[in-house]
Length: 442
Figure (cartoon, one colour):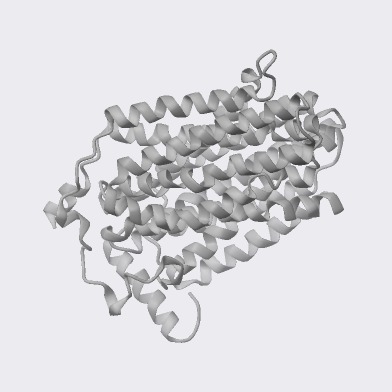
């Protein structure tokens, strides 16, 4: 047991810093693109509903390819898959920049530009998905069980840091002549730099064999080879994670349109307001993941409950906000509160699902979580459609879904037993399988 712990705790700080930077760079590019997307769509003439669908094909490909890339990382290693993911992100952003440039210069009709934009972005979903399960598995298999929650929270904090930096930097990258395509080209260049850093400086040593085997035999014959989305140990976390990711994406995708309508100004004039709101939300997420989780040593079970409870309150505040400048400040406050909740919930279901399986299954469960985090984007146009019908409706739907998840977090055996201690990990596995054998769902 001591050798397992020693092998699993061999992640150097420099290696984690590189993994952290890879995740932050990807998040920075994605959220930076989201922050300028409303202005791009309005400038080119793409309808709002279709603007929100830019990420849909990419999300489907992300979800479909994540399990494949997770298995590939088991065979080929974590580092090569990270490099594939960064390469996909770099090429996709470059092509998106070229398409946006063509649209801004009216070289093709708006619908042609939309189709090309959709395809260029799809490359990220197909190849960019390779890095996420590889980075999660790289950290998980080199981190002892008792420290994994904080490690996963710190890794999730990379996403939060990227969401702060991305919207802040995106307006600075709107260069003369290049215009709104500038941020896309710049984020592609940043990905190129990170690709070099990973290739040159990230160690790729194999984890000791004893650290790759489960600490204890699989309980009650749980099938290790079945797809993770059919594994009763993981199903509750996937359900929880899908709904949380859907609600967070819906709020993020709707935010720009909401602020434009609240302030009654042109998209270019409102760009700074949108960036400010997104940065406040990202800072709140970082406060959760880097501050409160560590300060109070919160377990996955606590994160799963507090996350959706706080997110529900934040969405309700946004839904009830008035128009005008006062409404903008209330929207920012509600968005920040909801982001604080999501900052609890995301590492909660990520760490909880990681703890529920053995060390040899980390890449597969990371692939399942990546698929959940990707496919939810497909529903974003539906929430924009609801927004066009009645402004507060998407946020009221989010409130109801978060309230339902809070009840689920208290009733599900697997979620109730999500805890970083090895004994509790077995208890969560047993409880989930027993519940499934009884004919119910955990």
